[in-house]
Length: 483
DNA sequence: CGTCTTTGACCAGCGC
DNA sequence: GCGCTGGTCAAAGACG
Image 1 (cartoon, chains in turn orange, brown, red):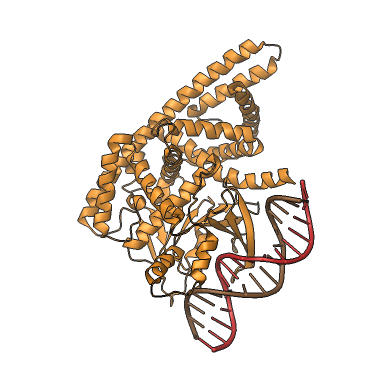
Image 2 (cartoon, protein in one colour):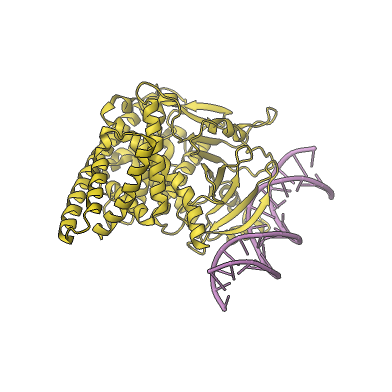
């Protein structure tokens, strides 16, 4: 099995090498392992007469090498995790001295609408430190606990068994007895949404889940129709998503997710699902505790409130993840951030830009960026063109991260994995952003000091960024494969 | 034949 | 109350 996968991967490695050579980019020293692997592959291919035993030996060597790489990445991950904890502790110390909403990322772990802001944060921090002894992954636990909470909220049968039931309850005339329940329902209707902006030529962005289109509308202010999808992995899954192209940039696909899955999701869907869940959690916690602001910059992250240019929209708190990675992403993004000056925002909305950096500095040069871009392109091509290669990478990352924390067989390991992956992705992407916007941010100061990890971090950034692009292209590929 | 998409109709919420 | 808009439903058609 491993040999088979390796061969499949090697085919793409050869293609990658060809692409890299054509584009005239030389790999960094940190990528020499990949380079060696490529050369080894070429040798393998050039000697078809070699016995299967030799191939097995070669595959074993490759496996050993990959294991070493994974161990190294795992160590980096652990050190990053510990650094993140230090930063969180620093942040909590700062927060106690002021009421400023500094700890946006800390509030990932909860969304309780009741209780004071300080109590909530203290509880989160406290629970993290307590759980830290169990899992050595407090952040993951914090996220996970939040994820559980949000999942419970949506998947709780007494609250919302299905979208149909929810709509029935909404349609049902409210009596005095149902008043409290009605308020609850209203709160759930007001649940958070997560928008993901990606550059995608396909009609929809591939996120690993199975969706069924149930409607389409042309919304005001955008000639591009908005498509409505519901998750069909489980018949009663409440998750919906809306897909609409950006009016200002047709290449940008805006996918809005609503609700949480009440069923096990495919591995390929965990990244997006956990990302959206975590983002929604962050938004809910933020909206429940802080005052909406027109535009704020917290720790280098751009947080803006918006009404999505339509004052008639129901008050859905929305968080937007910008994965477009284009220089115009912020400018086109203003479309969402723009609201009439005479119309104060009712709903807090949060924007996070996880796109790749476009401004170079001394630690992240333009050459690095161009190499990263070319690597991203080649990896994207390789990933999108072969599902096996995709599975290989997915499995490698899953095992890499999974071994660091969760126990196999534990019911929560999948979530832990996905959250760890997500955490790494966010951390790496944010780190790659730190040159332009995060420099000086207390969150990522620790990362800057570790120059020895910059290479791997950049690589990870490219990988995580490309993963979404690859996913976007996948939808198109899948569709074409279907037709 | 089953599944999925399309599309017009309907409903609820909101502003005026 | 009326009109507008977003969101959903469901019948009809397309597709494999």
